[in-house]
Amino acid sequence: MLLYLLRHGQAGQSAPTDFERELTGEGLIESSNVGTFLAAKEVHFTHAFVSPLVRAQQTLRAVLAPLPNFPVATSEYLTPDSDPRNILELLRTIPADSRVLLVTHEPFVSACISMLISSSETAQITMKPATLACVETRGVPARGSGTLRWLLPPETIRPK
Image (cartoon, rainbow, N blue to C red; front, side):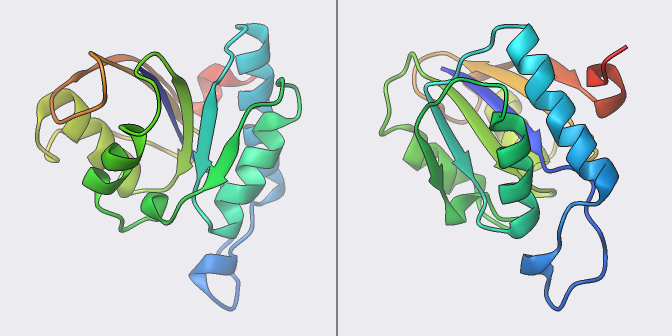
């Protein structure tokens, strides 16, 4: 399985609740750049899962704009403090040859990548806003089953 893990774009700090924090103008541009990058590289997804928090939903909408349609679902398993083992259980329900986009948050995304590539959640992974990583797993995702193929910060994804 190919897992594309994306941290939401830059978000503002003022909102009634953390759930409602929205992307800044820069965050919208960063998210749009990710979609443009993926389209240019002809990356096609079979599934996407997104956190229910507003900033992640906005990020996904911006990313999807230039991409062909594919199934998208909101998952409580992708919130900042979620346990990565839960998303692995969900991913086991889809075919092992899937290409899946996960739009999520810190510290979840770093812990999830760490668990996939090292069997623990202690590997030091830095995922700034709008950073995109690709992890390939051997068969269905499980602890230690993944290889980090690449990790791209937003300045690398930005169009020239």
